[in-house]
Length: 100
Length: 170
Image 1 (cartoon, rainbow over the protein chains, first blue to last red):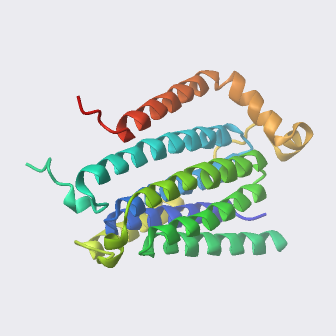
Image 2 (image 1 turned 45 degrees about the vertical axis):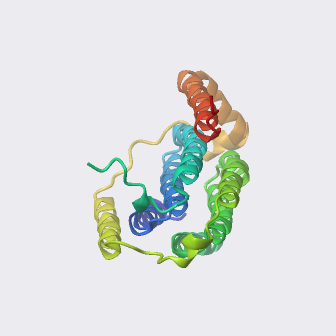
């Protein structure tokens, strides 16, 4: 059987790629997709915990995370459309009106 | 041996595809790469005996969320954005921060010790099927969080409409 650590390493790798994408890119859509990447990394580790600890609660948590990710995508894309209507840009550095 | 081979293929594909997602300059290419990525993650769930979640991954993530992303990219006009530089500001700093986080997680994995195993062994789930066992635990022990999630989705629906609709000129 595959050791649990392999799955956790994979999850950590995907999470780190998501963090890197969020911190290095300035296109708001790519930043949003990086957040989805991080959520998926957490899902991978939760499903593998559920398998290796033979407990289904991890999968229930993944179910909730998927629901929250869907809600977050809907709200976030609504914000992106509102931002684009007002600023005509998807570049987050150009939305700096609230800077003091 | 076969299980290891499948895992190594899926893990390599997931890492490579996620790096591709964050490095493409065209957001449409990113979304299509992410579609492939979600299919591979669904495959990983199947190898972990989570068939229901694999189906949910394909239906919700690949079917709903990515289509939403594609619609928004089509609504926005991103021609000028694609010509700009992809990485701006102190991007090596961000890369270093991500690498540091990865190292911290990997080092903390060494002290990880699994807790006592639960009641849902592979044999129990095989006798009852994954979806039925998951549904039983979701609608008994986790009924209250399940209802709260429905409220979260309602808020998302209303919020998306309020944010995206045009202001009426009065």
